[in-house]
Length: 116
Image 1 (spheres, rainbow, N blue to C red):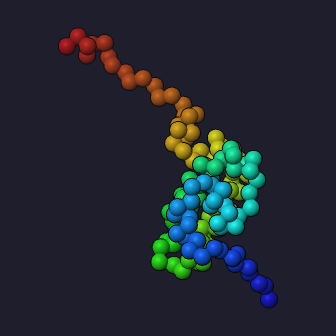
Image 2 (cartoon, helix red, strand yellow; image 1 turned 45 degrees about the vertical axis):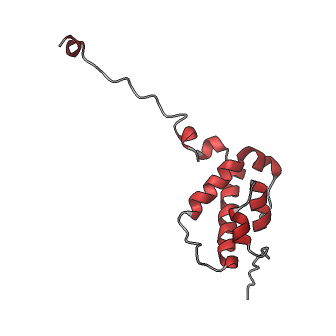
Image 3 (cartoon, helix red, strand yellow; image 1 turned 90 degrees about the horizontal axis):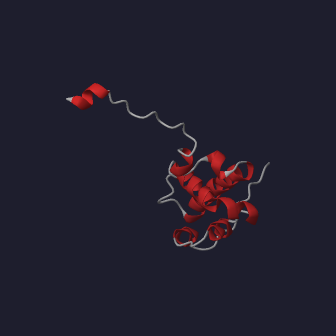
């Protein structure tokens, strides 16, 4: 028989997550271990990716512990992505998505149309 351990979340963890002021607070509240070197490079990318993952989840109305466990899972998943790839490779933000797109050719305007 396998036993799954649910971490001990602080009381009102979801309320505390909504007011967290740093990535470190998210990791601490949800009990996710992290390497400060990874977090220093990719903190915004990790939290944005976590938000993307959570957008497919409905945690509103769930008991605090269940919602926190889902958030913890999504944060772990997002963090692991940036342990193995760089923010440029993962391209979370639009500026990075378009950073390496090939330039679009200039619009062609026939010379004859300028004379009319």
